[in-house]
Image: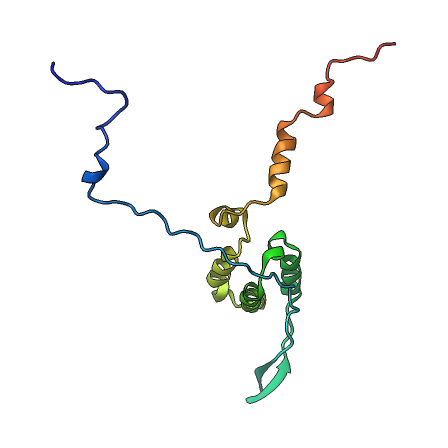
Length: 158
């Protein structure tokens, strides 16, 4: 047997100069300074409705569930960094949310995609590489023994 025995499994890696594909370094991250802005109110606007074959204008009424959803976004820790363009994007998304809660379920896929882009769920935030600081603190508390467990088996001297 004239072969050499090498540690590990599989063939030795190719010399980088002989590789067919050279993955380029990822582009450098461009950092800009943005000014977070406050959440705007849901806007008042009129919609055209057909009544007895006639078009008329009436004020749009935001569903209660959409007003709650909008308030939830305003209280989210993510909102602390939202800029005017983020809020504008969410306002458009609020319209889809209102349509969904008014029974137009065809908007569900677009609504789901749009809220994912701003980190609505833990999975979305993981994909966006966002983690709430409270999660770290909660993990630390779970791994730290409680006072009760530290003193288990101890008895007071009488």
